[in-house]
Image 1: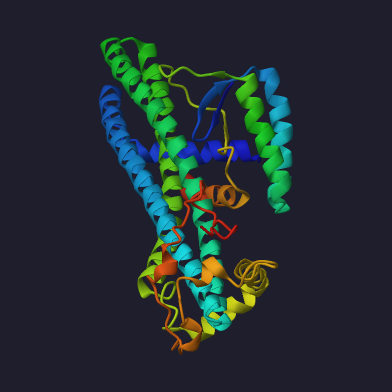
Image 2 (image 1 turned 180 degrees about the vertical axis):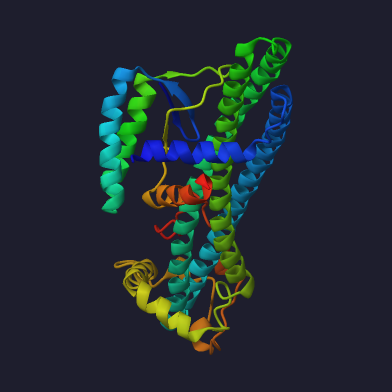
Length: 284
Length: 92
């Protein structure tokens, strides 16, 4: 059997389950209408859930962006202090953030698509419920006529099929929300545990090693870029860039990076797309 | 003949337009069996788009059951497989 026929059977089987068939077809009309109203409310709640889920992803993307800018500043500070090892760590973590952002973007797109779909479904269902309400009164009034019974049957299976379709659409949206929540939970944990921002902590050295290996190519490149920035080929020795940390090179750095030192004022320029990192370096 | 695109609505098509849909449906089944996502994607898109362009949308105040049902255009192969898996439960 083809896919189209099989799907029809599935949707109609679901529709039959949704429907409470009463002895009197006129009661079936009323029961079915009650179900429609119920479902309409469910879809509206579902829509609110999708919007909330989308919002959460957007907020997380912002937080990740902030963490990424901070790491980039830290990497720059570290290089200025000749701590290439720390700079490497910072850039490695930053590259981990870029991966997270990509994942978030995919989910954001999927949710946006679900939201669009559900909105259309809701509008359609609303119009159908309204039309059904008027028709059921007409059908009830003419019930004595023999053909009315068939028409009631058809109207009811027509609308329950729509409801079963809407039910599937809601299921799809809920699946996407569940996937998003799993990831969002992981990102929240990551942000909360401080592993993204606390460079000195190195609470998970193995993961850091793994990340480093995975991201080393990218990191090498960024290191090279930053070095070039710090040591312009023909200019005076790092005039503007070194100005913030006088004498820093003589002092032991202690593994700690100053989080809000003068260099940190290099304000991160917010990129237009919240899901991609600005790899140009964002030097002010 | 009424055809439903899941998540989108119903369309009315002439009987003569169904044969080409059935043909595409067979290709969809083959892609599904072969786990061939690119072909699946292409065939599903053609199927959904031809129903949309050749059919007339069923108005909101007309309540009729569908003869054929299509998955949402964006459904992945895995999603359709899952949907079809509910068949045994649904038909009981």
